[in-house]
Length: 84
Image (tube, rainbow, N blue to C red):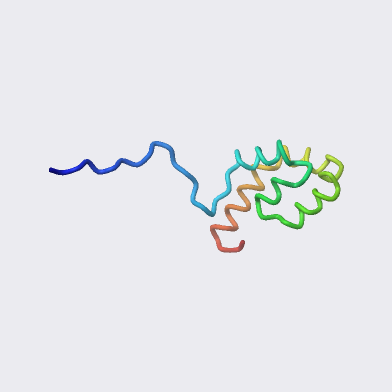
């Protein structure tokens, strides 16, 4: 008697080293003023800056609303090349 081979799940997960834009936006939404999304992307220095300045008085957090997808792409590219 042969057993059926398991089929892969229909959804595709990102590799462990890749960061997701949706997750980054969740961190931005709930912890943006404290730099949560910056810490998630591995930008510890910027995360600390946001933490101590309340998102650089909200201006940095507002800018990140529009630039977060490109930040995620940049981090993923750097990780794929072994830079980060």
